[in-house]
Length: 221
Image 1 (cartoon, one colour):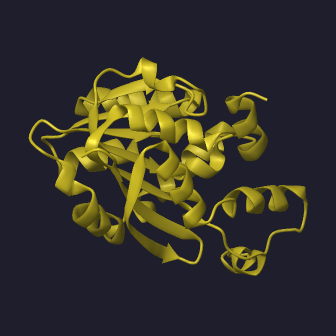
Image 2: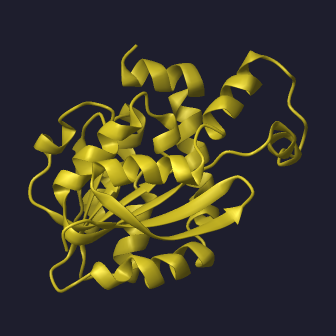
Image 3: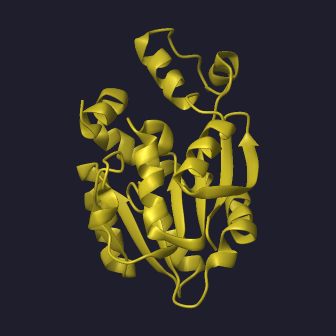
């Protein structure tokens, strides 16, 4: 199964997925998020810095990043067509490049020009057939000493998963598939993969029982 088919099997309707990402982006990238970013990621934003958003979706992070750090060049990577369409419109408005690439493929970094001081990945790793491909290619693009910010679901109990829902979902195949993906990795699992790709963890913070923010530094700097 290729990555688009894998994502389609999980989300069913890409337009609905797109709309949810748009509706929830303010909550994802809230003040707690930007406080963590400012403390652990922003120190890498030297003059003429560039930031890479891997799995940019409809491009909301690109806009927020540019508003907070207007001097930083931003680039987004996305695969889902409806997400790409919106992200490219966003990119045209704010001067951001948006590249179509499969983050689960072996050499997706070859389609990206230059290097970056900051890499960012929000709610993406748990979605990918091969999340290590994202990390090892990110290590090729982020300069030594640069920072990587991963914000994602993390392992939690099924009871906690159900308790987070406004209405308890039916105990059907769809619910169990979503839970298995949303509880796929512990923070330590992500750090193991990041270390093997060429990063070292410098900070972590749980947003709640099911989400974690992780900051890494590219080794060698």
